[in-house]
Length: 288
Image (tube, rainbow, N blue to C red; front, top):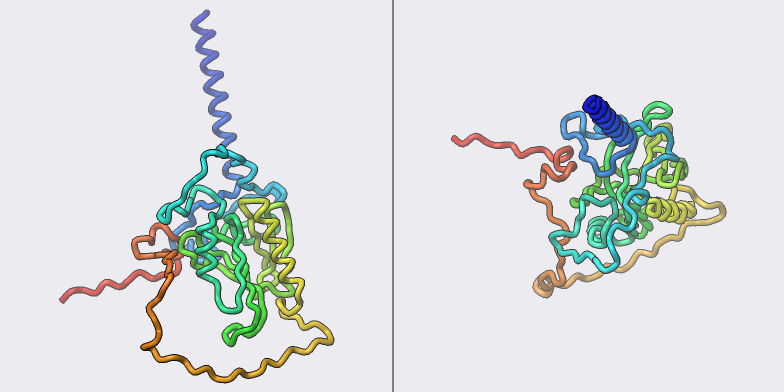
């Protein structure tokens, strides 16, 4: 009888352990996994690339703040080197990564705002389902319209790839974008090409989502930035400046204070999704 009682007890423990594992697997399937690799086949290119993700409600959006917390003690400060400044295990953007993005997209008359965390880009499928398209770093570009190449003020939302800084996706925020907060870390907007299509951004950090919302509100509050002309205001005519005489090349020095912050080679194809989806493989010629 004693042996039979022990066997029953062991069977109950095994059943409880299996039930716990099944419950954990079900919970993981419901949550959007930030930073997970996207499919690399033909179906992985463009909007149709992501798998369907069941999100019961944007209010239940998962953020890394809820799980990570303060794991490191205050005395254990991380010292980064140039070869180990991109942590793919964390959804929080480092200062080095922020500098990468700013140097990649900055230009004359263009302001760059980089989110402090990663975000997933989802496309709405039906009324309640969302499909994962890309994972990257949200970036806001504010063109002031003060240059010839960018003569019209506008605000562009870019999702940059972590590490390579290549633009995985971008769209212009206009007066019909309807950028709004659906949940603490989940924002939605309408596409400029078709305002009937809705996309969503699920941030890894609630604070990063709030900061992005504040920045979007500041930029879109100016009618000129969203292709609207304010009543009673005339556009200032720019005076044509006199031609500047450029110095000869012999008087121009070599590049100084140069800092190489981003390097991408063919060996990084397996690491970066952009190289797999947007870059064609080199054609190998037959040797005669």
